[in-house]
Image (cartoon, rainbow, N blue to C red; front, side, top):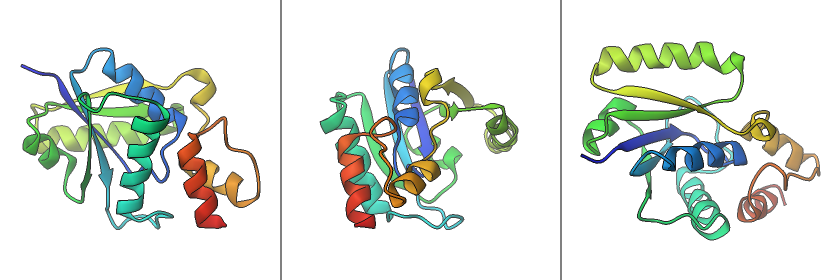
Length: 164
């Protein structure tokens, strides 16, 4: 049986923090499905199709990940329903700081109530990437700052085009 994990998020945009979680997950998972959420709870900078393209370029062109270990999908359903669709019993989540824990703990509990067979695995990005958030990356680029320590070249290009 393959260990397939769903890694859900908005990825608006993808950062080196997200990429660290993916790298670490690939050490023990057979496949990671990057599930880009299109929920209506947030105001996105990039639409769902733009985010998909940015993630693909960041992972496969910039970072040179192998496409046989990673699949990128868009979704607007429950994560547990996505797990069922892809025969996954694992939800992969990233933790940056203690402040993330309370929200993630509640999410884990809700997902467990929805499907008791699904486990959530938390991974932390490397220490230098734990402070990175998509929100900060967008704010820094909007104010003319340098974000090359926070995300990939193709992502920076997309951000600059958006704020151009």
